[in-house]
Length: 168
Image 1 (cartoon, helix red, strand yellow):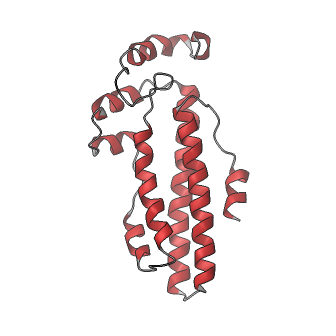
Image 2 (image 1 turned 90 degrees about the vertical axis):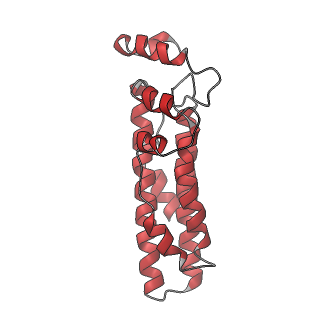
Image 3 (image 1 turned 60 degrees about the vertical axis):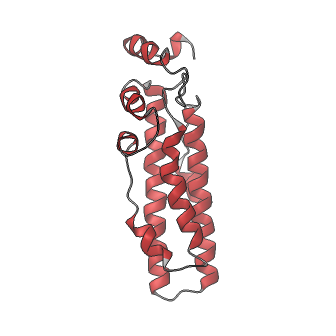
């Protein structure tokens, strides 16, 4: 990232934190850490189990979105305190699409789990439930890939139409 990519009012704070990321799993380019995505990987793994274990939807309903800072506050990540502090200095050009992507990801997961619960309770065809699990998982994975790209320097979030096309 060049200095011109970051507004002058953000530049000094960003540079201070970027200089301190050596030896951590935090990106010097964005000040974000991929460890946050573990919060989403766990729920997607549970959702993927639903076709074989429909009762797993109850465990999925217990999942709740966590902000970046909430995740690290509850994490065993060795650089968790630095990750929390650095988040306030993530350049807006990354923070905005990152937070937009996370909002979309939370909506896909929460909406998907609610839909799956309705289908299971209604006794829907297991093949249909399995198709919906695949669509939810595919959309969630695409959003996690997008978030991962942002963590590593992309500044592009997915458009809602892209997400909708994945959900079918």
